[in-house]
Length: 390
Image 1 (cartoon, helix red, strand yellow):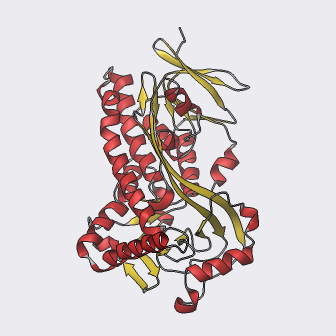
Image 2 (cartoon, rainbow, N blue to C red):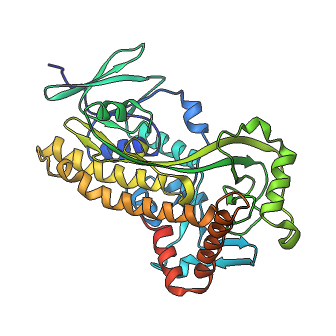
Image 3 (cartoon, helix red, strand yellow):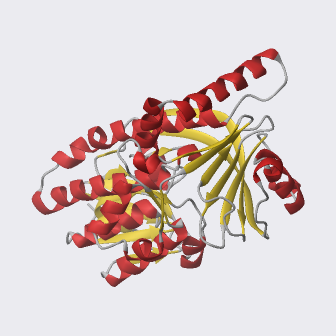
């Protein structure tokens, strides 16, 4: 039988693993984080930065929000453009009246790592988990090229291709999944935002998105065919296509700058039927991958990390497994609500390609949805509550 070296072994130093680790340390539970990449790679990986009010609350209550409160930007509006013009939706005054806080995920990750280490936590960078096995009252994580680590529990927060998910699905846990049939060229540019709000543009050539990150960096998205090679998209081609789809001839030019990064993202979603069992429990993308169309991924990670931290503390400190037994029931309804809205957003943003009658019909439905969102207060309240909620 393995001898536990830690209360919880956490796989992955992304938002889910780092929030979980900080919350466990705050509750007196010892843990160690294993991360396959080096620290520079973890802290430099640019990802979405839209934090819902719930995520900001969790981070603030646990002393993890100093950076985002000091440097984050509050957003309460988003803008839609189409062939009938544009309109701005002030979602901060609709639904539950909640804003987003925009704070680049790499900045949040740096903050969480610094605080975890300040609290005395251990992170082993360059430690790739190869296998998770249960051994009586403990679980063992085999580390490729390194010493094994054991703990009373293992928390898989290492993504949808990680060891945690692989170990759980190997036991027969089923997955519900969908390929949305849509791909985005994700582009990061060294240029100030061109719009005051998040911008969603519907165009017969495909969706285009504008997402502010900082005062000097902006994220753009361009819908592209599946199998697109980012190398085929030069900077000139990117800016030309953005100008077309964002209709700059009608609404004014974009602020341009060097392209820092470009990659293709295939929009896919999946959810495990159960996020854990026995000594192994999952959070974040390991438990379910959500398409980026509604910016819910990091917020689901924070939600699940909070619930899992409470459940693991009760099990370790008090021998109470009720929280772990209820973990799926507590988080999955909210996970599926987020997936439902993300799926709805995908339908709003992406019309069918082609010029045949069926494609034209589908695009007219797309614009009918947009017109309803522009004109209907009930529709706007629905959008606002789900856009900012988790």
